Length: 374
Image 1 (cartoon, rainbow, N blue to C red):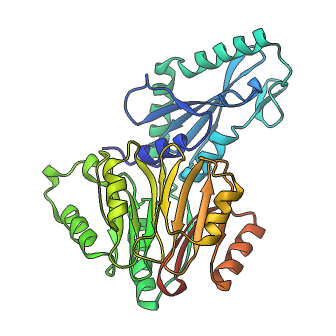
Image 2: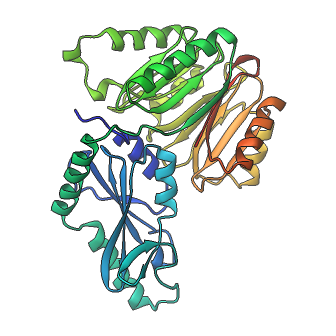
Image 3: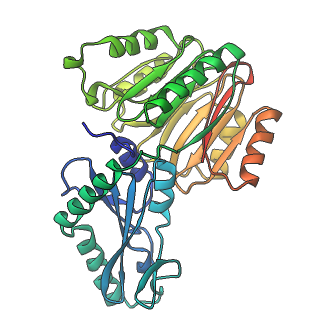
């Protein structure tokens, strides 16, 4: 199995959250993925094909320029948040002399309807272009990567946890880094934390819910012959009072929570994109893969924010803490948070002032938190 620089499951999950993004299902396997973006825009100049080479972390952007399909590459991408920014706003191409660059617009937005239809057809042709060319580029990138160490830089983290838990978390992160892996998901309840990394790896500290601990321990110590990528966790969320939710690559899931949440998860027609547990045992928030959600007994400030947005079904992630804290991210990339400590608020503002991009915040007991950014 290859060492993924961009986890295929995380790539697909990220792409599904981007409006107007469609995957080319004709490509086989996970080493090369291709997406047509800009389908939700009235400006056909926004049409582009994004090729993702998951082993090497290379992202290619294809556009029509001067009557030809041209592609530029960004290499050593190891963060899905960076990928999301490229899917949302792919680089535009220009030519200076005979040199291809990214920068100015590749076309105007005043085309006639026939022109738009023609360009849309060209976009589909870009989407369904020669697989051999993609495979050739992948092989050349893999060969180049073998000649030098893999750059596994990606998300950075800040966390405010009890001293004992902080040491355990730091050890987990050190172990993951030493393996040349990158973190794809993290969850905390203040007493412990779970990290998912690479393509199915899992690390955890003491203090996580007992039932989840037993399940992860079985995975960790199970026979290699019975473990596949499909049986590995792809997403995890923690709450207080032993509540948790874990989803696996094969689409199955396991959880512990209130009866209303149990009924919801057993009967939902769409897979959850994120699950959060709040202050009371019956408090939960589930975001589904289409951006819709179901919730119960959520913080008033979060409820007001949803109402301000006219309950728009474009959510990507919601987390909640046991003391009224919350974090909300929409498909547009916009984020909101509330009920947080002064310490965390100062840290967030400091990151944003230095042009950092906030990815995720999770909350635990006693104003504890775990924050990721790049």
